[in-house]
Structure formats: C-alpha cells, structure tokens
Amino acid sequence: MNRRHFFQSALAAGLTAATGAGASGSTPRGLAPGSAAPRIRQEGEAHLFSPLKIRGVTLRNRIAMSPMCQYSSEDGFATDWHLAHHASRAVGGTGLLIAEATGVVPEGRITPNCLGVWKDEHIPALRRMTEFVTAHGSVPGIQLAHAGVKASRHRPFHPERGQYVPVEDGGWTPVGPTAKRYRSGGPVPHELTPTEIGEIVESFAEAAARSVKAGFQVIELHFAHGYLGHSFLSPLMNERTDEYGGPFENRTRFLMESVRAVRAALPEETPLFVRFSCTDWVEGGWTLEDSVKAARMVKAEGVDLIDCSTGGASRNADIPVGPDYQVPFAAGIRKDAGIATGAVGLITEAAQANAIIADGRADLVLMGRALLRDPYWPHRAWVELESDTPPPIAREYAWALRETRR
Image 1: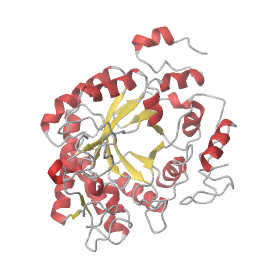
Image 2: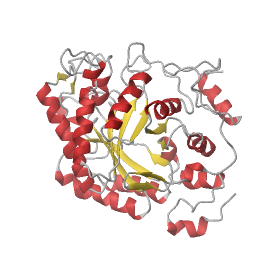
Image 3: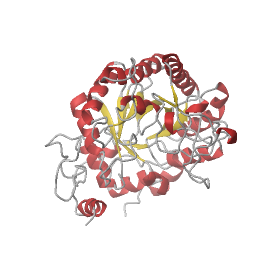
Image 4: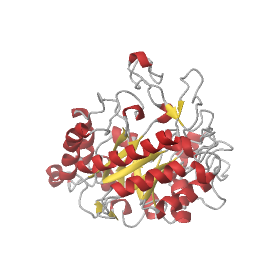
C-alpha cells in the first residue's frame, strides 16, 4: 500500500491522518515525538462553522479559500474571471477568500499573467471583487507576493508551461538573495543589493496600503514555496554573507523588515497573516523549529496568524503527501508560538476539516482544489455535519436549501 492509499484508508476508517505518519506510524520529519494529533471527533458541535474574530474582522466560519493563481491578468489587472472566481465562493459560503499571490512589483509576478497591485490603477478592478464578496457575507483577503527566483515563467496552460519567459518575449531577469539558479537551464538571477531589498520592502508596504483602498480586509505576506521571502529564510537558497544571510537572525531580516513596514501601513483593525513553508523537507534546510521561532518574532510585530504550508525551496524534497500531511505544523506552531494558525493541504472532507478546528490543531482551514471542484463545499459540509448554525450560503439560495439535511 503506498503512502497516499494509506492516508485515504485511514481517513475512511474514521481516523485522522493529521500525524503525517507513514504506515509504520512513525513521527513525520520535522515534528517532535508525541505531537501527533488525536482522532477525528464525530460528535458534538460543528466547530468548523463557529465565527472567528481577528482584530476588527469577523469570519462567519473557519473555512478559507487558499490563494490560487488564476494566470488570467494582463499587466496585473483583475478581470471578469477573477470576479467570477471570488463571487462563486462567496455565494457558496466560504468565510475568507484570499486572492492569489499578487505581485507587489511587476518583476514580482510568477508569470506575466499574474495579478498585481503595484500601481493605483489596479484598485478599481480589485474593488469590484471585494465589494461583491463583502456584500455576500465573505471576507476578502489578498496575498502579497514577490516570486523572486521563480518569477518570469509561462503559465501552466501555455505550451511551454513552467519554462522561463525570455526577456525578448516579455519576460524579465529574476532576482534573489544570491545569484543561484533554482534549476539548471534557468536564468541566473540577479543578486539583490541591500538598497534593492529595502525598495522591495517598501513595495510590500505600498501594496498593502493599496489593497486596503481596494477593499481587502485581510492581508497575507507570502514567505513560502521558494518565492522571494522564503528564499531569504531557507539556508538552501540563501548563500549571502552580509546582514541578510548566514545566521538565523540575518536570514529573517527581510521577513521582519517587511512585516514591520506592512503592519505600519495597515489600519489597526486589519489582520495581517504570513504564509510560511514550515519545513523544507530537506536536511540542512528551514525547519519547524525555525518556523516556531520566526512565528514568535512576527507575532511580537503585529502578525495575527501563520498560514502553515511546506516545501518549495528544493526540487529534491521528499514530501510525504497525504490528507492532513501539513496539519501537524499548524498544530505545533499554534501550541509552541502561541499564535493563531491556518492549516492547509489535502483537506477535503467535512469531518476532517471540522476535527482540525474542534481538536485545536488550527484556527482556520484553508482549502484550494476542493473549493475549485465545488464552490458550494461549505454548504455541503454544513449539511453533513448537521450544524445548527445559519446555512453558509447566499440568502438568495439559503431560503430554499435550509432544510437540505440529506
């Protein structure tokens, strides 16, 4: 039985797969012994549908749409596609909708077709999205990002998907903490100078201020998946010898400068999240212990929640993918750093998601492909869990679907 089938079988039997353990029952790499999560609770209140208040924002439930790139922009502008993508999940009952990794500078986009918020002209189209989302009971959020060494690539549905876009075809030279290729055959990135790093920090702050003007009520900084923020944190990607490289305190300098600048640009009532890759899954890389320490540091600077993902710094990572495989990282950071966390990664079933919240392993469940497949997943989960809360769906539908308990 392979690892994926093991997890699926365990979940079907009513057991949590949140330990991330293999068939041998061993503790996953990067986790302390004894940190395995308890069994899924099948009885009691559907905690998934309890509200969550963070600063001045209240989410109607603990279900969030994870940032997912749509690769459907021109010059960073949101389109009708982005409106439809967010509107359908708002109508479907998701509590928090986080817009895709949004470039804080043009060169910070993953592809030339990614969303941007580097100029004021982007605001009106983004506001179309946020106004609809807010009017239908969801909270609009946005993930601010710089793709770093992974920038300037073709979108997934391009014939040359994943390949770098040549400068002569509209691409640009990627940047990073060091002039080190992410993969062979790719362009050599430009090594950022301290002055250029400071300019990017300011771009994050300016993008955050624009995002608030556009109506976003939650701001998330992307420091995961091998993009620029993560590339400074990970020893696998950061080979600098100045104040931004080497020891932990130096590698976290860009993170801390960005957090302070963004927090200062935000209203007090606006929550600030940070997405971490909580482990690189590679010996000598960023670890859960590093994530806990960094989470404590950013909490002290006004960060409200850590969005807990993993991986992305190395193409050689051996990741034990399966349902709930990243949830123990959210549980560990929540417990040891004393900060709210979001869990993500193959969370697809109502009982599974409910147990993560009910068992105190995370404060928020972020879902990606499950919500792509079913924009009305929250309502289906509400039915399955027999929640006594109001139906998490637009009132235009809720009056007819309130009694659908079968």
